Length: 438
Image (tube, rainbow, N blue to C red; front, side, top):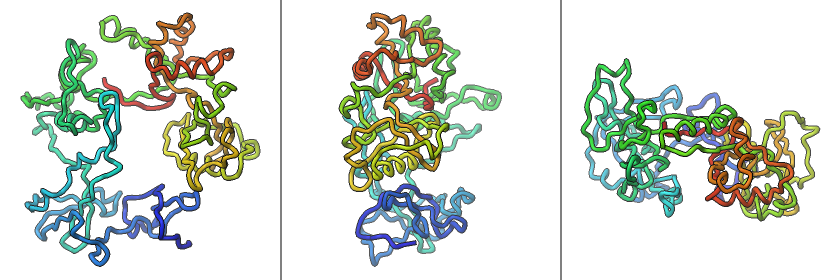
């Protein structure tokens, strides 16, 4: 290896939480972005060493764990002794000075919280434990254990945690009350990250059923009982994939619900045959892959092309930047890949390629083709149907769930209606998985 300059910061691109000195087979599993590549650092993730010669301990949150404290290893097969669980209660005045883990929120604004600003840009300082042997451990504030067994279930089913994990909890949680059939706590789509642990009665738990009087008890409701919009906390239960089968059944499913007066039938389609044309390739209407700012672009795999046929006319800098972004993407969609290019420093495109599009890029995984940024995006066209003069054309896609945009329509027409959120709502992408409320 070669030494890297230490007078600058580096962006992490891959890391293993296990200490590098405990990984005999793969000791270098900590990677930095260096010269536009994700390269491993020798020794991997270093051991936490709070050395008072270099660190002002008075600026840190440190808990001295007493010698008689009970500490056990957990997940030892995966983390090789790197995860420890403290089983003893520790009474120490310093604990009251530690930050609240709920203050570090990585979620941003949504329609219920339009002014919410995530705190991830200024997180609290970490909390360290000085172990009896003199070594240090880093406190993981994400894990709060609750007993929930058949004999002694958690009586609110985790309802308090569900409420507290919503964005509004940071503001004292003011329930989003609704009237009529939807009255009660409305936490759906509030990005709650704690899930209800109560289950419907079944052959395993029926002998241990207990009545709860906790004020925030949550309930996983059975869709068959007609209580889809009940007054208790409704938890997320179902994961759907936006594929051919799901898209083809969405209209029929909502049509069935409309007979009960709950929702209107929805027209939800993946949009295909979206393309670049003269109306949208100026880097103003839509972002081009090498456009100004930090453009987001969409790509599809081209398994039919080889290194000999997957070529482009881009400047070398641009090709390398796009290749790196595609290879380092964590997008798990198997049909599409969205990337963001950071056009600053050495990681962006050559300015000569600012208006290039529809290019091919060969990567270690194979060839990728740039496509329209909304290619196979899933949209809800329900409101648009009522205002379109030829709504029967749009309605004709309900059986397939995939709308084929007409080739004789300019793309400017689509770009215009897409930006009108009162008519069209972007839901997801074809192939995406989404957690939905049962």
